[in-house]
Image (tube, rainbow, N blue to C red; front, side, top):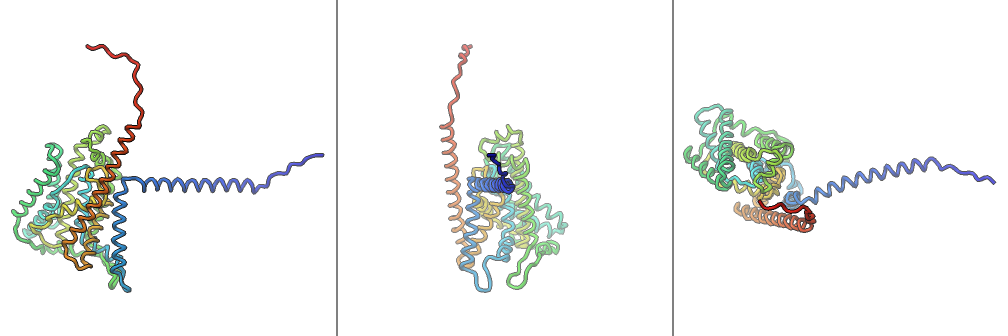
Length: 387
């Protein structure tokens, strides 16, 4: 009897091929999910995640408490007003992010904002051309940033002391320029301050003005510098706490970068001074008192570590939005404005405690890894005779 062998159907091969392809696609999806899982679990992003969670929580509370049948609390008008009212603070927070990432601090930015507003008002009253006046205002901030950077890097003065001296200098110069409020009535300046694009209609109308555009450009430039350039890698490296030694070993220019971060902070303060002058259309010697603390608080709430080396520009932007939303909720509740400081202080304390927990955990892991690492094998070479 002869046995016959029946061939396998062709569909089996195709089914196996399809199963393998499905397995490959499933494996690729799993790899993507694992990568995103690792990113989310990365402790560097936890403070920023906390900021975003706080932002969402405030929006949910506002939506539940203040929405009506005809109007929602969360709408484009809300975000438009937030950005209009806090454009100058966004720019200040961006500049402060660079400084804090290196482990430094800049206390002069509020006084520089006041000085820039007075310089712009005074020069316009004297009849100087508007482009020259705006450039001079930005350069005032740049010069103060350069002064602080040189003191910190080349004279080894602590950033707190160097920026404090610059703050007193700027505030004193404000009184030299004028002790009274100077109204800005230049037509070109007021046209720039009042320029805006209108969207929507009726109660849902919202705007984009020049200050918002300038703040957005500053944010985009800062994101590019910090995350896509050699300069940005050096900024993060300076925050490692080793005095820039590791950065120097990698061939990066630590000294120049440390000066440049203060120049950037000062330049942002100059731009913020012009934006604040757009907002108030005046210059006043008492402007900006405590503004540097608002910028620092926004950056810390945005997830930047005060010890340096960790933080993101977009986190600082979220911190400013949290700050602005707290002000909105307090105004809606009819509370006095000083309650803003109370709530900001409570939120800031929570984020500082979160940072403390993260840094303590990192130190414990480093110590554990060091204890678990195997000791180097003993050398068989005989010791060299003493000279």
